[in-house]
Image (cartoon, rainbow, N blue to C red):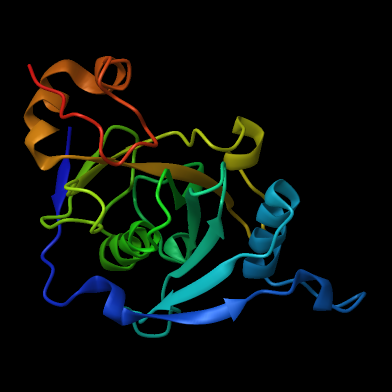
Length: 217
């Protein structure tokens, strides 16, 4: 299983800025929808609420930075669920069928979880395929409410399969959403030893809980 390690030179959340609330109802009848609009509308059809948008400064000339799309109190009050848009704007040789975007869903109200995801996508797009079972070592605490400092990638658990696979956004490629799941970097070795399936079904694992007990051998 491949492991991507981030080298964080500045505090990641300082590089993102709020774009406010997106108003889906302001789109005029007959006006052409851009891919980003269609993606946002797809998410709106699922959650029926307007998100907060945060933009990362792009590291690739001529391509917009990653936008982090944040929904509060989803799937439950006190939780946060977020998505990226912009990862799929850059190709990766491993993407044969479609292109990837990311999501995260945790039992925490801290925005750091969403912003860390946006930072990761912005830093690694074009280099990391964000395939299931891959590990990303964040190398520092993700949020002040948790000691977790890494992620693994798997299918989303907050939305249905038909809502995260092969999404039509009006481009010549489809978009599929993969999910980041927080973990402790101390768990990476056992994760690699037992594999994703056994790790997921371990009694100590809870995909939403950011303060769960560490999984040990």
